[in-house]
Image (cartoon, rainbow, N blue to C red):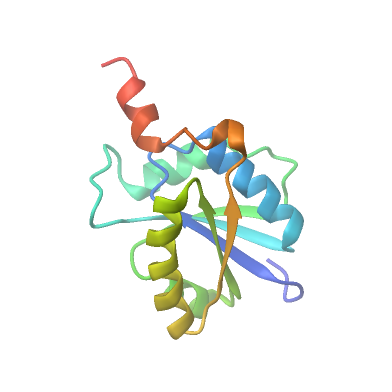
Length: 140
């Protein structure tokens, strides 16, 4: 990663990484010089795979020509990652008002730790897609 430009992080459990996530990432990479997809551990969620496996799955989906995008696995606070890696802003996608309320609380916490959050609304055609719905639709 270079030493110039605005670096952003797009954190999530990404279990799995959906079309909606890819759309938010595509828009984020057009707004910021570098974007790190931060595949994180969320204590409230219990994914079928660990963060390293999910990070590998995200890497396989992100187009190779998106050279300003990297993927990293992380255990810990997003704000801590940002401070340690010189990331200036957090990007979050929001599908609806329920998402926005939850994300607003997280954004306030991260702002208090020195890292602002930018919200990108989901495209209407993708707003109904959640990782939970995609997981539940998988053949068992």
